[in-house]
Image (cartoon, rainbow, N blue to C red; front, top):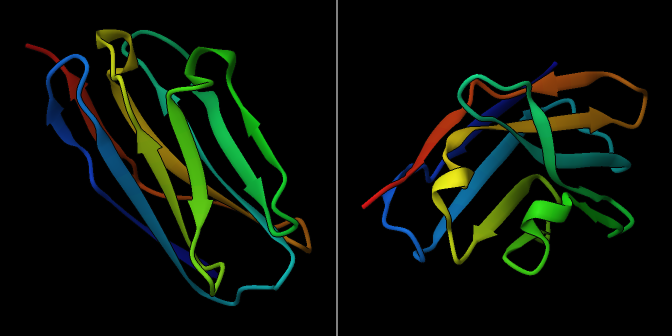
Length: 116
């Protein structure tokens, strides 16, 4: 089992920044993929950014150049630095952990609200 704890959500004005964190614990393999997804009001959950243990990244077109995903040295915590936030970025952000054996885990989500 893998447990995921997200933090860093909140209310921010348009143009502002937030940093999300997701800490993984439990049975973690060295090979894995961590990422962030979001679900905007009235929409389906969508990919925001992913980062593999091999440091490959993938971003949604809507966040390229504004968001950056990174991991700590232990590769058990993933961050999402969000800059130039827009009202359209308002969503519940979920952390995802895909273990090297294919097991798939999700966090409970953290709400990001971009509003003046």
